[in-house]
Length: 148
Image (cartoon, rainbow, N blue to C red; front, side, top):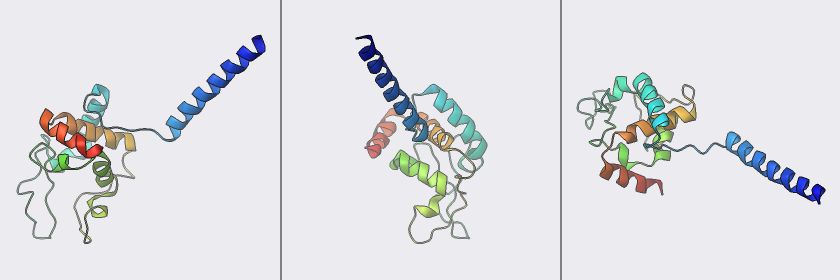
């Protein structure tokens, strides 16, 4: 009987290790605007890597809807006045990681760099969580529907 109990305990331990090992190899990142630690980390990332173009207050650059003389668009706002909230978290992470050119058709060129070699995924997700934490509840609710 004792041997059977030891086998059961060992099996449970093995399953637990397997689960956490899977989570380490394939983390399940989320941009959670209610996760205080993630939002704070995202605020730091945003201020260091994003604010110089997208604005300290997420306001974007002036005339962000109109192309500059080089054909590129200024950095859009990430507050509720922009279009960031029209996109899913995965899409926003992809744009941040690989640059807008990978997601905009027609060979679009942007001043925004790709951050895949600069920031780990968890920092990108945190920056998105920070941005989302600034949105009014109705905008956040509408954006959350894009994630389903």
